[in-house]
Image 1 (cartoon, rainbow, N blue to C red):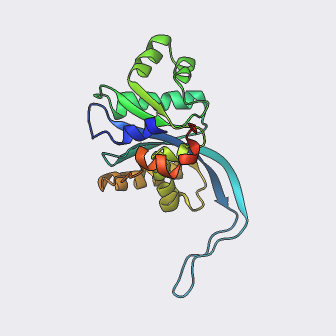
Image 2 (image 1 turned 60 degrees about the vertical axis):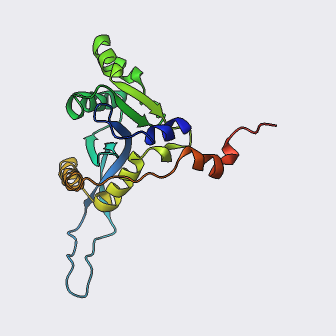
Image 3 (image 1 turned 180 degrees about the horizontal axis):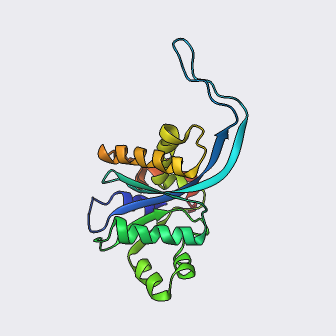
Length: 207
């Protein structure tokens, strides 16, 4: 825990961007009947019945100190999907970075091993060498600031019925562009000193 909290105390450095990564699934929901649009004195209405059109996975890549984020939508959340997300992060999002300081949880796919399962060893090694990985502890994924961005994305964009992946990608891209244009940052205040007081029960007891 304190390892991640130490990362959050570091100042902004474009050569070593701090990126938080997390993912969430979204069920695609279609309508069985046309919704009734809102009109004066009456809210919009939709039928309680719906059609399930499968699910998609969303990878949230957030750089809190710079106020930037990017969402990658995939059909699944396999090792390959994670590895390709890392490749995009390294080669497209931060190609000039000396090292990407990456905070993420301990999901079984979130490891350098996924790179080796997807790419040739030399390519996997190249990508892994660009990362300085910091894992959140078990039951401590709330320490990953990407969860904050996912919560905002869910409230502002995903909390409605979206019936296909193409529409979801367009809606998420519009949300991302607007939020990046405003360079909205996360004001993280929880420190190791706070943890030692508020989460004292989680520390070993020394007699």
